[in-house]
Length: 356
Ligand SMILES: NC(=O)c1ccc[n+]([C@@H]2O[C@H](COP(=O)([O-])OP(=O)(O)OC[C@H]3O[C@@H](n4cnc5c(N)ncnc54)[C@H](O)[C@@H]3O)[C@@H](O)[C@H]2O)c1
Image (tube, rainbow, N blue to C red; front, top):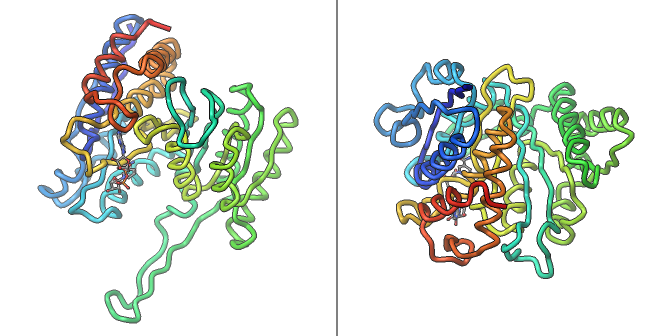
């Protein structure tokens, strides 16, 4: 029987609560298939920082390199500046393991009311592919005259032709595999950012030429933000830089019902290193400890992990169970208009495994 070695980092805030439910569902679903999980927990995050002065141990990345995948909740603490939590844990993991694709589906499920009027189930069904290792989040820059009135901060966006082409190629392959609208939209801002974004545009032009069966277009980020609200039905696969993908996927999450439904995967598509599976949402300090966080994003993220590891039947089983619970509409957390608790939703998904 196959056994998958997974590093689990619950992280901060609601991350701790929703990972519990994710593990519950993953463990239960594996009983119906010919594989099992070997979960190892690491208590890294903000609490670890308060105790040790760093978000993870110095050899944290070496430890993680021994695993097949990383299952993470969220990081972020009100008493810690976000650049510390992000640069101390998430970004080094994404870069060191060359997780250059961040894949984020946005689907309007049956039973969910979009804040946009008149949208029917599955009217919105798209995947945003976000470049995940360079772009605006490359750790390149510096300060001059730190803490003086003349203070200067320089932040450099890094756009390499290779880095752009490989993530754009992934987007086209996905459009083929999805076999839906067979359309890829590039997000750019080359009208105002005439260097890095032009490398992006040229990469898109050269890769799109290799996929004559897939339609494509290019939108400026400002127009794309508008169209995510005005006409989200038009999108199939959307590919954008690190920053643009980050922003658009919050819009994608909220127009399909809740941050609590938005799953995400940080992938090394070539499987040289562990990929990392964490939902779009953060640690949600406003609801942490209240037991009302929606665990479905984490659970669906677990399905993405199972799929990435080759367990697609188990992944579909989890997705179908989530769809079933949403369609029934009886066990929902407050973000979806219900009164249920985080663990109730996890239990309901477990009970719905195997149902259509
Ligand atoms: N990948 C990550 O770990 C990640 C991502 C985004 C933000 N953050 C961090 O998280 C902290 C909080 O950030 P934020 O408030 O901007 O974003 P957030 O995603 O944590 O929360 C935004 C809003 O969505 C709600 N929400 C989020 N997830 C939910 C869920 N599962 N169920 C129900 N409601 C949910 C929250 O209650 C809040 O009102 C910050 O420190 C930020 O840096 C981390």
